[in-house]
Length: 452
Image (tube, rainbow, N blue to C red; front, side, top):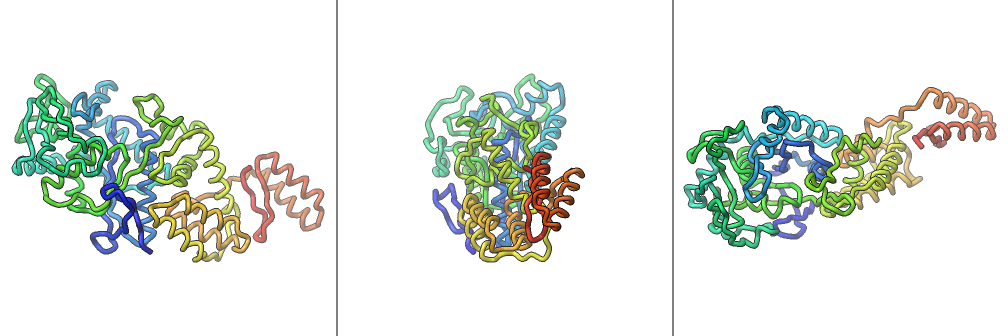
């Protein structure tokens, strides 16, 4: 069945066909590891996980590369301010490597708690300095660069297709910059270390001691790991206007061919209708959700059930609803049945939904229709849901209800009462079980126990 994906580059849904038969090159912009990723960041990685799982569900092998930015990301997109990692290290009294390793480890921990498949490779920017320098040299040779007193810049006026993804960068406003930057859209390829300042992370280059600009790492890493062009470049919509337009400009200028066939972007996560950001003081991390008593997979459910191109408004009420829905889905597995078969009719509908630009709300309609139908056995429902969970990633196969011993005894007594047709006692025991936080349902496979 054909997959259709919305391509930011063409502004429309297009049939997806990989450059190599059954092998997909996927590059996703990773975190800048100077602080913990907030759930707005994590929602993008969940969307990318659904994209990857959908490709794999369709039989593709995915070569997934994600960069780790540990140098060069400044506090301003205008190529000014402090290096975020260097600043964080200074404030914490630690080395840059201690800061980046700590937050990279925390990032991976969050991915695992959200059951996100890890990329085949985490590519650290500082490990690709040679490749970044070579890319800049190639651009210099082709006449796309100029030098200022603080670095080497890409001249967007020389690249006529600049801003092809749209966004603020497409206007190409001519704004003079105090350090010799010719126009607003020009961006740093290499930044010089300031005179009298000793950075923790700096390298020699043909232009002087310094460090790469933030944008150049993705072009250098993707070319080294996936070649150019590759199939899909994914990321958050906040990267469209500047970061991804810059990637396209430097990569295409350097190699004379497209960077990626598809550009796919996930929408912002909002808190009380405002964009989530550390600078706004409304950034929520995964540990905050867990501290409120929520399962991390309830947050995954919340994100997965929405469409990746629509803004998600995070709230306690939304989390409670997602948590209840997840528990209802898990309750299908409170009694494990054997010998089930995947329901092909439901699978076809599920596949049609996910292959239509990751239409997960439609996919969940299929899921809940399956759960509610009396026409399928519990065994068949479980087999089909486990098949779907290859995409949903809710870890249903490892779910088990932890039932206290006292509740198990009440359930056993109730089973005896039912067999003796003592329904008054059975009803009383049902109420006793309910008071202890569990519900019991009578099925052909036996008593099904769920959390209330």
